[in-house]
Length: 638
Image (cartoon, rainbow, N blue to C red; front, side, top):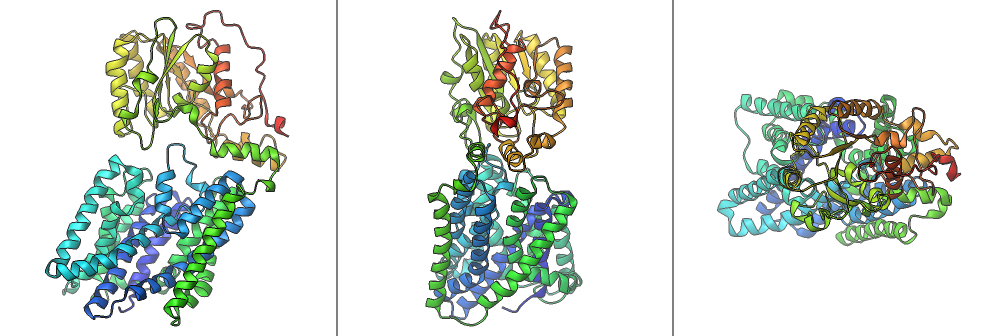
């Protein structure tokens, strides 16, 4: 296949927004669609190559995979091993163990499956996973396994209908993606069956002759670029994706490739300019290097990326990518080594990466690198949030409403006061402490990840949330007597109108509502911030990383509760004064395991503070004050 410099330029259009998006350039909020552009390019190049060689009678499975290994594996191996070495110095034990698992998955081309299976509501943020970006490589590599036999068999038995067969397969994958974007978001994002249509679209482009008229080709290339740019500028993280939304960048990429197939166009000449083609040539290495650079840079700097940081990580990524392309990619792609040599080298490279991953698992993340106090706090980064009662009373990612165990979670009794926790994870986090501290009280729980406890807007378009809140507000609460209903959520100022309507509804139905307000939130995981303070001998280090929105929101919600003549439980005040916040419990454990969710120890501390403040007086009349709860600071860990 003749080399096309415009496709090199299109690669730069794909990689630069991804790099900028990951580096924190907010103006390119849809930069993640660059991956979808890459999928279309890959499908076109690989599909065209296979079909051309089949037509010429010279296609060989062995040769195909030999070329794939030489193209993909050298740079990937270099990045995996470099990331492992860096991780041995930077990552805390629980993070290094997780890294080891992801490294094995990446080496075996199943990291998309790994990250899909390990993702969840309390999954550590992406900024703690140096190999998260390898999911897209695994999708492509799995596609490479499927495509050759698919084309061989389809061509053999359905030669006259080869295009139709590919169209049907792409259509099935696309429909599954559209449905899955709403019904199974994590699977749809990561897995080949719901991504295959993007790659097959590229295959189809190579099966159709380009348009003969120049003005049509000009319009296709220019229009395709416009679609890609529109997606980059308009799309937002968190939208239902890929699904139908992915048509914009994918069709745009297909238009650029198809329109440029027959020769030069004005937009194609722009794409062929040297700066863009150079970035396109190093785009594979740039994609591989940029994410570990960003993750490790953020961990070392212990702050969100500033504008200067963004410039630094982009520059470092480009330099590493250029070196990788020149001294790793090009040498392995040139020459003609024998197939046994290629496959033998590939086996050694994959084995080395798997061995490095297994080493981190076998050594439990090399805990001897850090002090016992750091290791103890760091262990909470992998908090086993059993106290939330996931899968029964807290339905989250992967759960359905039918997983909600009504018999276990809503077991109201006649002989004890009944207190119901209703809302999202910020309600669920209170259960452990309340169940332990409210002696003689029956604590019920109806919670779900991202499920807002309001009548007017009960869900985030997640069916399990809509069903849970519909059941609670329209069936359960009107027919069951509760002594107290505690509403908890990751409240935002935009929720206040819906919350006010819910309070009016509760007053009309004589349901005793208590609002649990917002909790203190940090710009990173609290255990990581505590460790940073310990390592730098700055006990108050986490204080500088508190997000500013929660304190005024706490006051706003307290005023709303007072206006509705309803009790208000200030979760913020339970942990914070005007000058400082409690970060560890009396036994030295962090009170929060991520940006804001309570550990079991933190839940107990908050429950005790609520009791002190009289929040539960209606169910625990005459409860004595607890004088033993003086604030504990990080200095107790030193």
